Length: 351
Image (cartoon, rainbow, N blue to C red; front, top):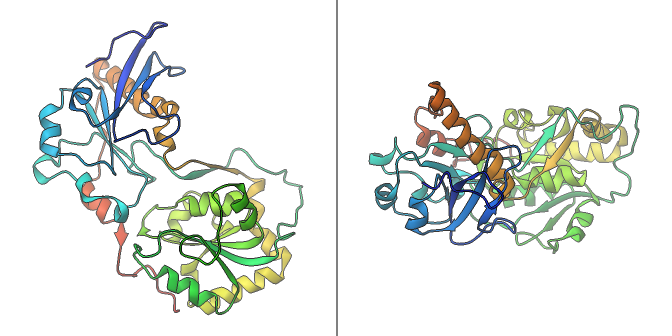
């Protein structure tokens, strides 16, 4: 493998092969990149070429690009690391990402997903930093000011969902006005700052995931709601998964209510009481959020800090005699597929 060839300015590089048909991020094009703070840099290769695979230190298998497991194993050189990568839920990840039984225990070396506990290389759509408050503890603000509308919902995936999301929105709109945007709604929302400005005129945002999967919190929660200073009304994973990554008093979970009507009555109560509404923003005095782009883990600087640094750490451990392979769930295939429900069992609310 090409693990000792020099950069133009000295040093070494680790070749990482992203198994994809084309670059997936604006800056994620093939090339050599320095990795700040690391003795070796990154040579990023993006294609589905076997010759490139054979000469790489690590391969990131991107879920939307197909491959043949038997051929990959025939071409795999000794010591090469394979990384399972997806930002999608199991419901929206093709079945070919799961190795056949004969390759189940000798394929992936690392899991790079949105899951909070099992992923070796963790990549969320956003995160909460409790060490960097956004506001001073004495700062006062009325977060309902200039918000002239009640509830917003935006979605582009109208049918491939594991629960009746659109039916829920329609039921809620019988009790409280809901502005619906995108392909699943009635109103346009351009993919630029104009959309954010429109969403910010609402007090609540329906951050309803298309999949009922553990830990699956997407841009609906982090970007569309929290980034735009809107109170998120959430559904997808259970409440405890949200509480692992965000203050529990700063969002509203659909499962906390017996019916859509009861939820609507609570939203109306908050809409009419600025003091109650503003309590949902107290989290800004104890922390702040960071929103990420969809494929941010594939940016060169992120591959440096995750894949390349992990490769170097593993090699150091191997030389020192302390190396132990990353731990996987006992049956990680079951862990992956079994993290979702498709029968609405997480959705006890009455429409």
